[in-house]
Length: 568
Image (spheres, helix red, strand yellow):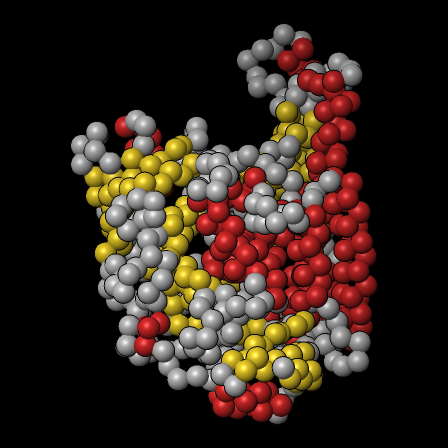
């Protein structure tokens, strides 16, 4: 066995590509049914994602990489799936309870879907095999009979060139209806076993179904019956599959996962790098294993998209948990100042003000679609402002680490923060690229939002504790109020905008002259007038970083977060 370690940049990348071509095996028709695919890229050990016209390899952000874009796939979906698989197995090599709930698994036993999930998780983490191949199903149909008959899901796979092996179907759920947990029985001749049960709860994001191994023939029509315990549950289940829109088209995203098979094919992928260490191991004259370290990402993806997917997961883990209502406000409904561009042309004054601002920041996808993975955000900061950003980021990271330790946020958020730091680190011996500046700036804004959220939480806990020990609970004061925002956000998708509650009896809290005279007038038995009310008298604005197909923009939504109350 021959092992060669070397540092690759620039021209050496071409040499690596030629070496892989020379070692690659002939195409194996068992993978594609003897039909050529339109486009093929891949790595030896990354999950490969395909649809009717696209085949690619995707490494999760745990290897600092993300997949190429595919039409009709939501941003970060594949990256999120493999992140969830990576994290589903604990240090003792056992599935976590969180993983069971996330994938809709009712209970762990050797014969349940839990063992299938464990195998997939180990395969996705394996650095020795070809990993997982993933196929994207463009859609499906749902039909229903009367109240006593089960729902029927139909998926057409005839347009895909699938490997002849045992697949696993993942249905990625967009949203869950409120209410009690749901147990669903799914039955089909293409499942193994033919009847499988999933348990859907508020924590469930994916429904996992183990398919039957094809004996020389791929099943091109998957029909699955879904049955619940009651008509009411059946209606909720239908809502999960088709969303709010009426009709028969399934709105959930469907993926097929296949375990990689060693020795069948070596796919070629070109990698971009700014500091890339590659170890090439010659296993035999027909096999080559390539391990990628540090910052690597697949061509067609970008550091920006990898960073944003990891940032969204970090915000989901690090921000205080809230329980918003199921209705979601679109940010376009809010009044806004004219948007400002965040890019190479951004003014120093704007960027300096944002770096020093502690306002709540929301990161929003506006209309990404399939173009998300190829987006490159860049900034061009002066050396002085770049140094200020670096110092402020270091201080804020230290602050957040202390806060997460104090609040017992959990190790997962800490791990994600570590990866975000790696993706946005300023190199010591070379100029900082515009894309790293961009990621570092967004990380600072995100961490400022997390810090602000916990400051609010701490202040409100102190207020509640003070009110419980005194008669001042009914006095006009600031209270926490969390509202739901649209789901197409990197994060957070809720906002604590606060509100004012309490009485305005003498002595009035933070009153102006009008409220004082009005209260005096009413106390003299003039009851026909409106009494002073406890209302917000000072606000903070909301900063929205809007990431759309045209670039990155900052929108200021004025007077959003109440920060002071008074009697008016």
